[in-house]
Image 1 (tube, rainbow, N blue to C red):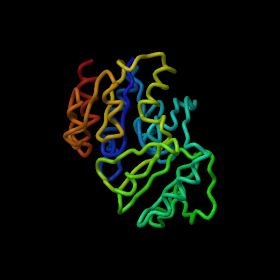
Image 2 (tube, helix red, strand yellow):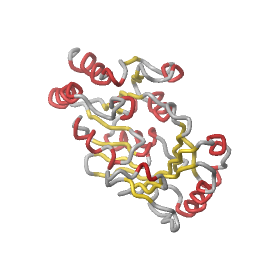
Image 3 (tube, one colour):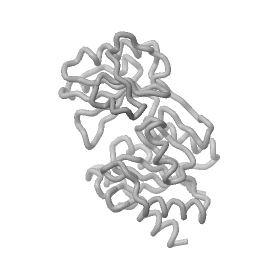
Image 4 (cartoon, one colour):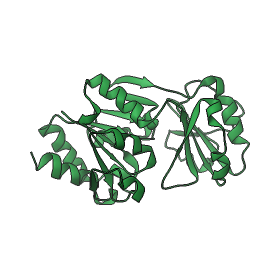
Length: 255
């Protein structure tokens, strides 16, 4: 058995956030012909990843960059933002100029950016007059002043900052114990396998820890050059179904 830990955005998904029929067919073959386990490893919450998990018949998810890991219906681990510090941190972020703040709870993402509230039943608008500090999995920020975000002393809030390679104005703020590797280790412990049995696919900085730790690292052609330095293999770009192409040629045809 091997585990495939696969990022979503700019990796498994096309740029338009879709999964092709060809990719779905490859993963159906993988599930019916092999005992490989498919795990989605993403910065998204479960609610924003479920349709993609169904499309590739995934066995589990490392969500919110490792803040919550689920295998089938079992929650293996959760690491939220410290509730003793959450409200102070959110108030600090809200005081910054030209900055939108999104707060991810188990069932909803609250935001002060009205453009994100599109009727998807995931995002809800708030003016943050009141803030519920418990069960916050992630705080994400979009700011026209990224230098102000980088200057924050997040250690004082027991949090850390995660950059986005494609958008220099976007940041995720997480419990400082959290990374995709945290979730992957929890999953491997549950399955009683080693990290050497994992094939990791990614394109961005939040994938770097699992790419470095996995037994085999597959980096997308659309990734930045510095991430490609850690690749054991390069896949075609996300818009060319690079993950499915690699799976087909290395795990199906080779069998």
